[in-house]
Length: 117
Image (tube, rainbow, N blue to C red; front, top):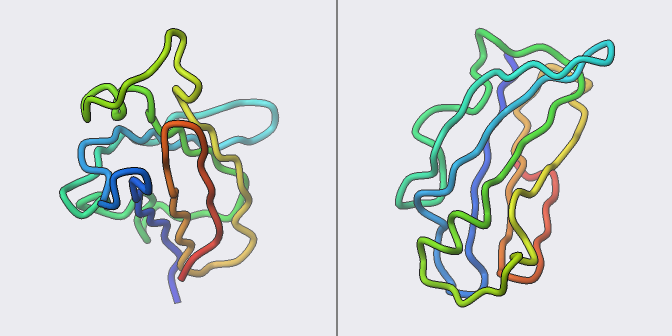
């Protein structure tokens, strides 16, 4: 079995997938932070390809940066300056070769995540 990483972003304030949200993936190792890729969510709130595909998967510590502030601006959400949420960093470990699904439930003033399936 090969490992890979996916996500799904849902806008809980609007009750729909978060389309057009930029996501960056980094690998953290030995005090360094290496940018691996930048993707944008589609109309279903998912990326068109795996965030970390099977051929590039390695166990370790990773960070996803969800550009929530830009997304909220694009959707016309009224916000204050500075925004309460701008870039949401999620740092997590992948310790086994498996499918990791790290979704984000987003609203202008809060978010949650979990290891999905």
